[in-house]
Image (tube, protein in one colour):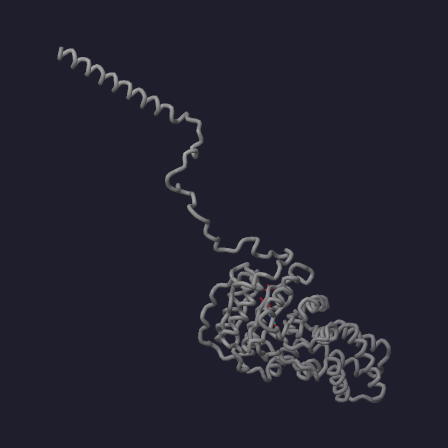
Length: 409
Ligand SMILES: Nc1nc2c(ncn2[C@@H]2O[C@H](COP(=O)(O)OP(=O)(O)OP(=O)(O)O)[C@@H](O)[C@H]2O)c(=O)[nH]1
């Protein structure tokens, strides 16, 4: 009996074990063919590649944040909150002492004379002819037009010269030189204020504000170089300067500007590459206020005057800066070698940002110095500075007398 019972128990255990094995094998052999989606059952823990929370913000600004060249401008809301800029590096000690600005044009006079002498000497030679007939006057006119003096100023100058030569009668070379000098100066204008405005102001809250200078122009005219050189001019004249690298399109521009700044101990405020230039400009002025700087110089990206989107962006840069205080000076940088095209550029820029001064660069590389007269006449805005080379101190305050003297030798 006991043996029988034991045999029954063993039989039951054996059957149970065999059926358990069969069920397990059946389950495991079914699993791969189970057509339920793998995600049907919620995982207990986040899986690799899944985020458990909100994605981290990207390091670079998105295309929605950044205005692309030619894109319509975004509304002026970016700066009301926190402008996005990276921390500006500490300014180093000045490594150079810039040359004083007084008399720079005298120093650079030979360079100016070398490039512009053809105009002055050409005019003097023509005026010295025994007979000043119509052909000669036409040649005088052509000489002026070729030097980019422009139609209006040329007509005016020729009329005045004709009248004065007629009254003079016989002409000695000295008399002619003096006469031409006077008339050229009359066209250029000697009583215009050509100083770069460096007086700061006071905000409505009584806070001291630095003078703000915005540097604008088309591509490659020399804006960054001029901003750097101007920083030296201002430092040489005893001002403390903060630079704003609002040219965020050209990657090297901010580095270039920072290098200029470091040489004279001026801090450069920069933003993220391809960032919003208005934010950088705003931040530079804020930094200037915080530092108690005398002048904030803002370099902007080169833009073709024909690109409406980019011109609108420039208008925005100025408006955004003005939320903190007035922009005292807008310097338009014109490349003297581009001739009459410079006038068209000047007209458009003046409409958008109310240009207050002209910087004429690369006058060392062209005989067409007459653009000085044309651009002033066209815009009613004075030439304030001229660039006469690539050297750090090759930017000079424009002095009509020294300019004309270099012209006529
Ligand atoms: N000969 C000469 N070269 C100059 C003068 N001013 C600037 N340059 C040169 O012009 C070139 C362009 O100057 P940048 O300052 O880079 O021009 P930019 O307007 O900032 O250029 P973008 O930012 O690309 O629009 C550089 O090689 C400068 O050295 C000048 O007065 N004389």
